[in-house]
Length: 441
Image (tube, rainbow, N blue to C red):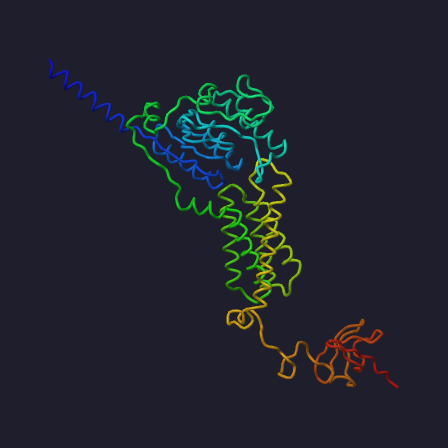
């Protein structure tokens, strides 16, 4: 009998161990600044967890916040998750980080951590307009309501005018300590270690899959940095300007298109650019190319193409945001103007300091085409002065005449000349050959 009990105990333990091993937990990281490059990583982590049959996904949060539009994208992805979501705040979830944390179904905080202070500020740390604050208040309220948390506390994290009895007065934003978060229902429990978190979730012994950003997400995030995005636009403008001013197609144009393709590719992935902006950009390139290869000079097609390219870049800089104001538009204008100005300065520098280089000589004509060396910009008709011919077409006043055995475009000095009339060249002005009729006696 005793042997049977031991056997059954071993069997139960083995079954529990096997069952635990079948469980799976994914962990993703929301750390440092929240930017648009973080959103694709979080979306992929959730997708991988769903496909992998995970029992939960834990977001380890330690951030002072960042972009509201990026936090909104991440919040939406978490709310749409088909598996349980857990926020583990091991240090802080401030500003946009608070919105992401309360979007999770379960919030676990480490002792001494904090959550809150979600009012919207500009890059200088100053509070921005009421339009921003109103949007953020509604996002915080709706997200808290979705997961059964106090909407007034969530709103007080954005607006200091909201009074929470016993917590803050009307002059301070709400930032909850871990103990306060537990008291006011914004934390479900307090733990320091991830193993304790797993045990609380009844996932002790589960397989843990840590999702790290891949190289593609790192590249997209890098390309979205304002300085890098501005540099890509500058290279793009430089390449297009250089191709417009030089015959054929070469390295500058190719480098410019690659740079702008990287800009639009990253912007599309980060939901800044839509297919509309991309089509505008392509249409602009087609017009510029037609100006270079088909239409001589630089006219309506080239100017229209450049305007479409600039407009598509501008819309991609301001796109994907839940609201717009003067600051966002002005920053986009500054980035564009800086890129265009830098490209023009670079072209001027190259034109000034590289004329003697072999590479530059391939781009521009460096030798003079003087008339005494056999080069002429226009035909010389001065030898026709005084010669006679016959009008092949009626001159009204311009037309064609045969002079000295060759067809020449001519213009009547003052009167209408019928075809077949004998004419005489009285002067030439560049390519303009002026004739008068020879009157029969």
